[in-house]
Amino acid sequence: MVVGVLLLGGCAGQWVKVGNGEQQVQAERYSVSLPDNWVKRALNDELIVSRDGPDLQQIVVRAASHAKAFPNIERESRADMLPSELSAMFVAELKKKYPDGLPSLKIERDEPAQLDGHEGFFLQLAYSTDSGVRYGMLVYGAASEKGFVSISFDAPLIHFFERDRAVFERTSASLKLL
Amino acid sequence: MRVDGLLGKLPAVLLVLLLGACGGNQVRELQTAQDTLALTGAEKRRWYEANELDKVLRNRGILLEDAAANAYVQNLMDELYPEFAGSIRARIAKSSELNAYALPNGSVYINLGLLARMHNEAQLAMVLGHEAAHFIEQHGLRQREAADGMVVAGVALTVLTGIPFSGQLMMASAMSGYSQDFERAADQRGFARISERGYDTRQAAEVFRIMREEVEALDIAQPYLYSSHPKLSERVDTLSEMAGQSPNGNGTLGLQRFEREVGHLRGRLLAQYLQEQDFKRLMLILEDQQRRAAYPEYARFYLGEAYRLRGDEGDQEKSLQAYRAALEDAPAFAPTYRALGLQAMQDGDKAQAIEYLQQYLGLNPAARDRKYIQGYLAKLGKAS
Image (cartoon, rainbow over all chains, first blue to last red; front, side):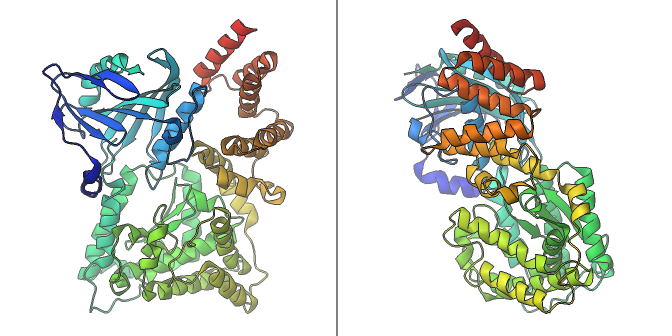
């Protein structure tokens, strides 16, 4: 974790509290309404929001051009891609980010879903950390003419996942693909 | 996503394992399991750290959940080194990388990606014999001198294994000469053991030939082992020469037991490659008809998927041909119908798409992607 923070430090924005009328974020490819009194940070093509710190819960909005949608598996998305194919690519990309392929990852649900009216996918995943803490992860993803957008939530299954899940669902429902 | 030290903690722990206080002390070679009951101070520290690493790996979920296959690998290890029975714990890791590694406490991990690529028990025995040698000769403890030149923690796993961990290839050149000696020593001990157990010693070189082939096919610029390590070609040549002088050049392959106990893992590896969208490896092992014969009868479905994922000019036709061939080879294998159905859908052939997708769900009513397929069928129904 420490190594990761050091390496990423150069391109990470500061954590900024969400509030005082700043809940609405508009980016190049999306707009979203963030939960009040959480904190947010921009990191490359991702917007990260958390209430108690990213180890305890985080919502990540990621928007990328089709060419840069899945860089680790070196594949591109397309606006007309089938939702099941996008979902498979999302999982492959996630696994590829880790040297050992994230072996604890379990796909609990994988089904079609809408993201701002665009046909996409919904994934419910689970994985464990090196210290054995089980995390849950929810993801909505879809492709538009402009690129691929996903919004995900992950948190320890103990307490935080269920507590903050509704906030994630509200946030993902507010996501608009531009 | 929070996975602790997947990118940081593990290499750091391993670096500690390797750089720990062993300088100046004579490191003994273990003779039997009894030697592990009376560890020296430095050994105790490495053991403790390796035990902690075992826990991390377990938490990370790397262990393949296949009790019978794991028992077979452990039994084979015990047959190779009966004097260390109970001290060397051999396990199968889920990773699809062509890799195996040993920790200083006697934990040996062989990745699914290596195990399922072996052709027979003699080759597997060579891998296990080699890794156990790292433990017996305590290379992890002796490595300090060799590691002095290392500047990057991430190379640590490679140090133990001689076969690099995924993603660490570019760091290989940091290694110094000691590891070259260790790898040669491990090769020689592994070779000696398979020879003593009556295996066909020519298979030792085959292990490294398979690795070399992958390096070439995947276009890895600086192959596998560090510049100071014995290069793969050198290892192939050396082990081939040793086999030529060995009395067991015509020993057993252990083919039947290997196929019975772990042959089924090849199908699992194909599915894993597909989930990882690793079309290069799928093509490497399935394009060759002779090699493909060792894989399940539905293997050409995966070849078709590989062409689809690559998406070069002409690949669509190649993938269709492979799917159709898979249908003939294994008519009850459901995923082929899905692939053909989705392709027909893309081509606008609605009737054919509906037929294939319905066949898919008929053969696999509990398919995880059932809701997607039902959605596609609903759309096709409306459109037709």
